[in-house]
Length: 268
Image (cartoon, rainbow, N blue to C red):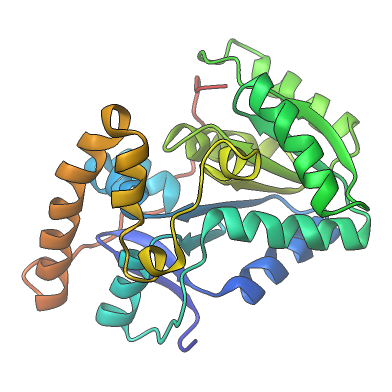
C-alpha cells in the first residue's frame, strides 16, 4: 500500500487502505469516543455519488471510504498507482471490526434490515465471537425520519452503551443515514451494505475466484435478477467508460467539496 490517503475515483474520494489499516482507524475512533463515518463502496456506491453530486459531496465528507469492489481497487491502482493487493470488502471488514470490538469489550449496536434478519444475525455473530457484547438491535422502519426522530435514535444508541454502530440499510440509504447521524454520535458508524444478510446466512458469498476476478456482480445478479439488473447492466458500462475518460485525462473527475449541511429527512 503506497501513498495512503483519499483519491478521486470518478469524483468520489476513496481511501487507499487495507483491512488492517481500516480496522485500526475504526477501533481508534471507538476507543476515543470520536464520530467516524465509514462506508465500503463498490461500483454501484461510487456511481450513486457520480449521478447525484449532492450525494457525492456527502460521501466525500466520510472519514473512511474503502474500495469494496475489485473495479474500485483497480481504479485506485490504475489511475493513482495505489499498489493495493486486495479490496476492503464491507462484509469482511464488518467481521474484523466486530472481532476486535469483542476482544476489547466494546459493545456494538446493529441498526437496519428487518427483524427476521436481525433475529438470525445476532446468534450468528455471537457464535463466531462468544465475547461479543451486542448493546442493541434496531430494525429499519422503512420510511423517512420524522421531526426529532434522529435525536431519539441517537439517544437510544448512546443509552445502550454502544461504542460502534453497524448500519445495514442498503446503498445509498445507509450512507445518508450515516452522514446524518454522525454529528449526533460520538462513535464510529459503519455503512456495511449486505453484510447483515450475508452473516445472517440469507445470502451466499460467491466463490473466491469470482471475487478475485470482479465477477461478484454476476453472482449477485443471478441471485436477485429482478432487483439488481439495472444496477449491473447499466451502471457497470457507465463506470468503465468514465474510468477510461478519467485515466486518459479526457475528464478531470473533480471531486465535489465535502458536504457540511444537515439532511432534514432521511430513511430510517
